[in-house]
Image (tube, rainbow, N blue to C red; front, side, top):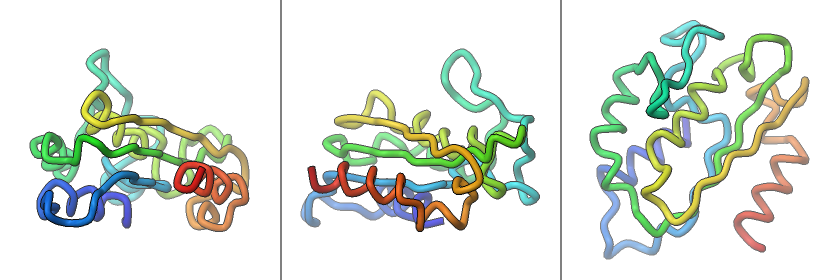
Length: 142
């Protein structure tokens, strides 16, 4: 929940007098639900306008306040796909994770997504994944 928590902080509490918020990395962020709580694999989808068809209360709140997210921020969104037909990392669906794009695309300095695929893309394994570590290192420091 660090990704959504940081996003929420940025849209509700960040002030220009704080240190610059230049880069933001979300890893497997449930921006529009968690499986078995308020999301189901393969049910949600992106509409033509780029928004998820089904939006939980948190996503709706983020969306209402999205303009407050710091505009000069570069955003990297990393999410997992087990490639088992669930289109998820076992806890967060790809639509839920990718919903961050619906909140920031066109409003930030840059937005990019990276999909990690296969068994090592399982939700709790992503933070120990070499591909993820390399991507984060490149994004933050190169």
